[in-house]
Length: 314
Image (cartoon, rainbow, N blue to C red):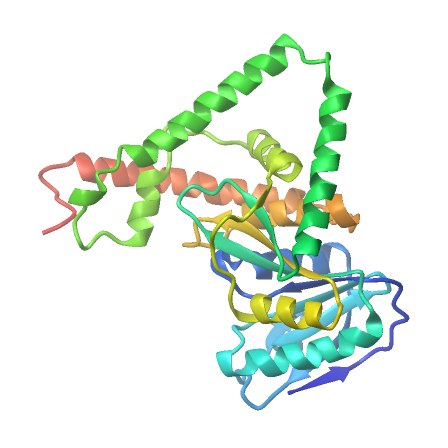
């Protein structure tokens, strides 16, 4: 495993983002969007005989599968392919060796966390000190926001809060109403996802944008119990051992399809905490399109389930 540098950059306390294929493709979508939206320069790539023999082509230019983009205050690691498990250790070792000289202010790996009811965003690190700092930053920001709003809440805002609470209860009922014990064994994960969708939901760009913004503002949590694996796990461990601050930013996603909404939430958190200024409007619009298609599929699925003359399962 070796890193091939294509350009020398004079880094100034950069943020390092590692976004590879993961649950819901959250890491890939997030890192690729940041690269394109901020017009980051292609500065290097990784080379190993065990990497898949494939190159992505954009505008007739072929690129190696594992690449690095950047500018003086930001570095993004991106991969078009899953990194084979036997290459995770050498990849992280080569990367951390380079980061020791660059001295980044933080290394953030981006991951999706599978959940049938995506709600939360989490900070995870092998360093308790780093987790505490990240959460203190978040709590401080939330306190300032709450203090600035004291005494200014309008009737319209109160009504909106009530409506949102009702919508959340309705969303919970979609899952609570599923009889998991009597589901046919042949039920696929895709069908289960359709069952959890609100078939009466008519989500538009405005409401989805409000939902994303709300999660960015208030969604940070400590993960009480879970698991982080692969590159994110070893990257955090190796970096923090070398006194390079590192953490993983996890967002819940259904995990059965590419999730641009979850990616937009992750980028929004990075915007808020590190001022990278990546626009997420395109991702939210794409998420709205996917949600609309899924709602239509859910309606068709509900029709099929109610037609006794055309049973889904034999």
